[in-house]
Image: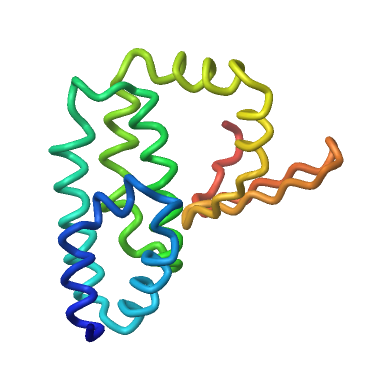
Length: 156
């Protein structure tokens, strides 16, 4: 299959690839490699994924816990597909806004982290580099550095 054929195929099932991640990590890696030089295709894929996420994931019947799991997958595949972060807001922002509007989001996060200590350890060990911030966690408690791209206004 040609790069173009592979891209068209993946474009049609990107939501399923995201949903089934990390089982689809190899396919996502191949897709990331094939769209490196095709920015227009990447934008089309992001548009299609954002629309599918809105219609299939961000709906009342989907449990918050499931949306959170898929959101983590979205962050991981966006990191693979577009390390520069040019499509990050287009795909991730609608999920962020939807989760902020759900009343049980915080409760779902806390219950997931506290139901099993392995969940918390795995959550902390997972380092997802987001385009808008860089987080450097050193194992010593006194060395936590967070660098934000937006300026902090003095006096606030």
